[in-house]
Amino acid sequence: MSELFSSYNLSGLHLKNRVVMAPMTRARAVDTVPDSNTALYYGQRAGAGLIVSEGTPISDEGRGYLYTPGAYSVEQVAGWKKVTDAVHAQGGKIFSQIWHVGRVSHVSVQRDGIAPVAPVAVIAKDSNVFALDESGVPGLVAPSAPRALNTDEINRITQEFADAADNAVKAGFDGVEIHGANGYLIEQFINAGLNKREDAYGGATIAGRIRFALEVVDAVVARIGSARVGIRLTPFSRLFDLHAFDGEKETWLALAAELSSRNLAYIHIGNAGSLLATEEGYSFLKEFREVYQGTLIFAGGYRQETAERVLDEGLTDLVAFGRPYIANPDLAERMQHGWPLADPDYTTFYGGAQKGYTDYPAYKAV
Ligand SMILES: Cc1cc2nc3c(=O)[nH]c(=O)nc-3n(C[C@H](O)[C@H](O)[C@H](O)COP(=O)(O)O)c2cc1C
Image 1 (cartoon, protein in one colour):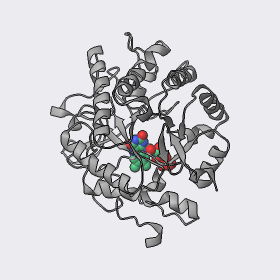
Image 2: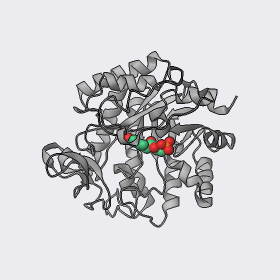
Image 3: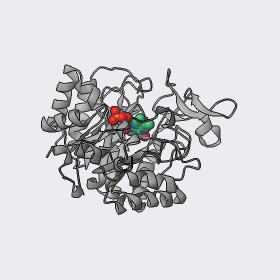
Image 4: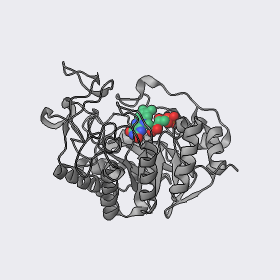
């Protein structure tokens, strides 16, 4: 049997296979509260060894997109409880991805229309978020100009990550994945091309760049324990107007070393697939694996064959699948039995109701 379908001990949590459902925003929580459809959707996908939930904003300020279910109100926690119950009833495991978008936001999704926040007051150019346009109609709009955070506010956000982790555990999640990837707040601090702050969180030094990430990790670990905490990273990511900077590789490896000493559940490399496509990226990931002693999850364009290859090569421990999980609720089972895969409908990725969400059948029902 392929390693993909063998069980895995994730810091004491038994995963029935090494297939992870990648975090995917589906923007269907109109009032920011997960509902019975959300529970149905995740329950249908409980054949994955581990599900990582869609990004869940830790506060109104941390929100960049309409209709994303949050992790900071009593109603949201109650909504998520239905989701975790549905997944656990099917023998699945689920982590909550906790998220602050930083500057990748728009005044129309911020409370009272205030400016989004960021390490520096620099707008994300050539980017889009899902918010309200000038006529109040939902659609893709350019991010608004952010204002720079002061240090008290940075500490406040760190605590909000910890509060969201607490809420996730109250909602029955098996753990949390800190969203440190894809150009959002944590990566905005890490990227020295953007982070020109001159305080302790400033981008001029590696310690400054990674300070916020580590403080968030430490605060969350202090609250719920290291075994329940993972983090998603996208080294060398260029999403949302982030650019190359001097010492980039050393920065990621220094972060890997710091995280290694913290005994986390895992690091999830969101762009592993594209990194591995170049010789430079491949050797970077090999080095990353040497420096980081814990569990790794790779994501980004994987199919069964390529997933089995990276597992066989020992580059990673688990492999995450995103888009294939949209159209194949029973993806792990289909791969294991060699059943054909369905293609997802891209037009229903974000927003709407059941269509393109809970109406993809399992293979046997076809
Ligand atoms: C509809 C959609 C929503 C996504 N939302 C998130 C998200 O909330 N958080 C995140 O870290 N990545 C998000 N991603 C990225 C996926 O987790 C994954 O890394 C990406 O789709 C590449 O993997 P794939 O080729 O298997 O789809 C999203 C991707 C898609 C297609």
